Length: 256
Image (tube, rainbow, N blue to C red; front, side, top):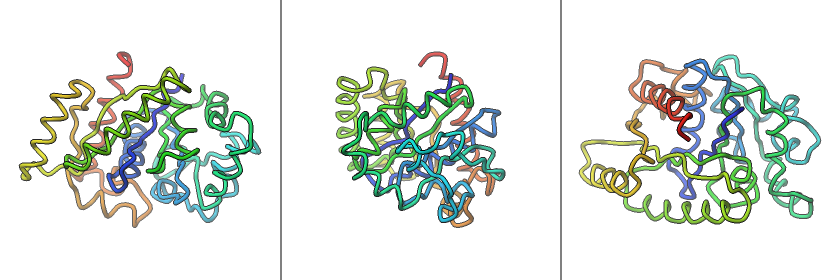
């Protein structure tokens, strides 16, 4: 059975897409069969996985409108070692088109159920807003991985996300829960970041992943080459941290 996780945070600019593509590459690196679903019309996770969003014949848009299956629409990225269900600007129109359709919030779940045997992990890169697209991701997932910077405003954004997850859990998806918080862009030299990190650990306990992703230039450079940092420069500190995170996630699966 595939484990389906949303990578989500309602605050923008926290490294969601960087976390999603590098975790996908890290899991592939340790021998897992991975599908990365790009639910953001900007298509950054698609481009960051070596897939040109402008050349997509079929995308997540077609899957949500049930005119294509995941097996038909997903592309295997040779460079990265995982499958990508890509997105482009077409997806922005899906918001409007889904409004009048039946089961509008469960379209992605139905499609993933049909592809369950093909993958060990499905990672869903969600847009920063709580939209019909994000809702499709949350209704399909077993849990949410929350990448966050150790800064004051990040804590406020986390409160909003926790409330959203509680609402979806109560009304739409009883399986949904927070899998864990991933500290990203971490700089141990900054006292405030250390303090927020300690606050997170004292409040959320073992829901905070042990792995910490450092602030890393090579991770930031990688998207301009259309690759995850794990593939672009495997020896970089950030890349090594994502591979460690992938191993930690695989180890945690039996207890989730």
